Image: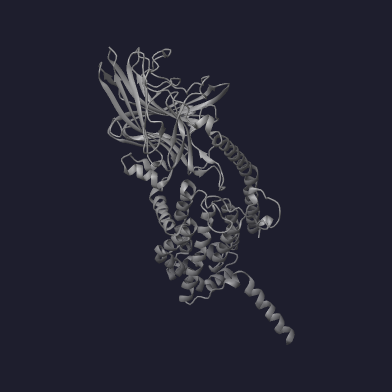
Length: 625
């Protein structure tokens, strides 16, 4: 009795810890995230409505009559110096060149030839149909802005005056960047070196930048092509171990002939370490959020040095904020007078759509598919997504796709699960003998265990076989969770009825009668309809199994569905739908196998209903007698 009381106290304390964590930790985080999303949506709306003054291209200076009279700038060293574009008085008035594609809208700042204004046309900042579009790259002066830039740096000690972040580039050709109309920017240094950037874009999110340097000066010059992505401020992160957000890159063959592979760096670690550096041939590097990313792709056949740098307390205007950067530097080339250098790199800025990212990987970008965080179980999560995407293409609903994939998984594991349920059916037949042993040796727990093990050996049974169906579905559960959590394809995807986003928790709650009562409940009490269905099916499934001889274990199995109901209530609705549907299919499968082996399904008895009915029937008979 003391053991049972201790067990019940442990259950209550565990529930108190769970609810306390939800109330004091999870709820404040969710409130902050909602406030951040509302602020971001408002900011996006402001920027979207300000197209005339800030994003629409102003009259751009032409390439004829280049700015040779600009004040000389300090030359760069062979390693790009750390920093961000300095705020200049005329930054917001500087000319821009519009970008317009089926997926993107925005502009290139001619001051510094920077990508710093991109909006994703196909994705809303929130789930609403009229939500403002999602901002990706943001201009200087906007909190959390990031930008990308390409150019050349000179060898240390060189006297050449290369353009910097304040230099206004000229438009040599094109007036709007579209998939069918590339643009060319041009700048001539006071020494006579002519620099051009020809920029093109595809139908999705990939820019191609062809840089050319023509040495029209009287002296040889050594130039190093570079690309960089800069981000100010540490973004609000999901803070879950299954997802990486921050600097990321894949580095191919290194100097020792070995592949460095995927490199993921956390923002706080980068601030502590300062610099993370790799030299490789083939690969890419950039920064990633949960659904969006910006990545630099150097020439895949050229050796480059890639760096991630982080610096705290960098002055941006009057504020001190951390600044992060990913950059690459190609080998330098010396140009004699009259010689020309040309190099082509690419720049990805957009949503991490699986088909798009995989397409770029297939086109020759080394392991670009790893831009999506499939995790260590890549071999499970990627096929799971492929199966779900296939049914989605056929049916147009990811929720239905989850149901069908679950059926296929059950069929694939049917022989293994069948053997497990057969074992449980045999144990059901042995239940009277087990109860008899318990009564005979009720004061000797060791003797009980010895007799039970003897029965298991005689009948060739494994008592743990009943756990096999649960163990089988754990990796499947994780792979579906990973797909729902990390892939943008699942973002804001509806099911039916009240579930309008499979990647978000069920929005209903038992504690306001699923919306019938006119008040909101805190997030830790959002026990929705689907989590309840999951808990009910899990409880019924456990009651179909023979109860453990140990009363403490039996009580634990009764309470376990309550735990799972509370825990999974905050998980994506698509995952809870999978679990509930899987439980229902398991009930059908287990019932069929038990019937086939002639085992009585004493579900009502295990639930306590049949015994109560029998007692009431006996009482009636006695009264009649």
